[in-house]
Amino acid sequence: MYTSMNRSAANAYRQVGVQSVVDGASPHTLIQLLFDALEASLNAAKGAMQRGEIEEKGRQIGKSVRILEEGLKASLNMEQGGEISQNLVSLYDYCITQITLANLRNDVALLETAQNLLTPVAQGWREMGQTV
Image 1: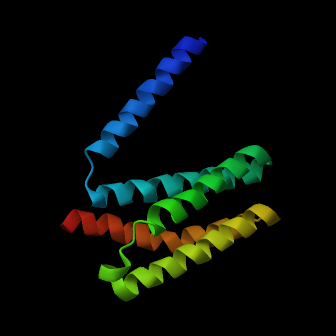
Image 2 (image 1 turned 180 degrees about the horizontal axis):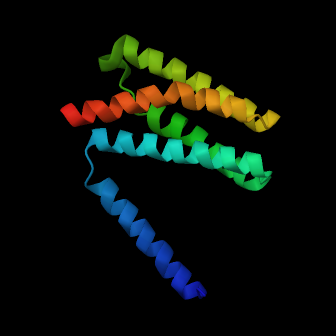
């Protein structure tokens, strides 16, 4: 089907496509991309957990935690954001804890708890982008 060369070319194309989107994106769009990636990663982790795919579950949970920690949390401006930024830090930390416990306990409900808390924030961000 795919040769290793074709696979390499496909991966390179995918990377260029992603990099092109990122290079031309506004800061607002970059955060939206992080929320989209987080949602996809949490859904993939949940599916892997339900199927008993331990390695994939771990990979997706690690990705979710990195997006929260290194992407969303790291992008907050604590000076300008004040109380809202501090509340988001607390929310992201709580969700990281829930996601980590979900991994340790193999508990889909804990993943869903994090998703249920993050979805309104992502939706608000999405809606804010439509009005700006």
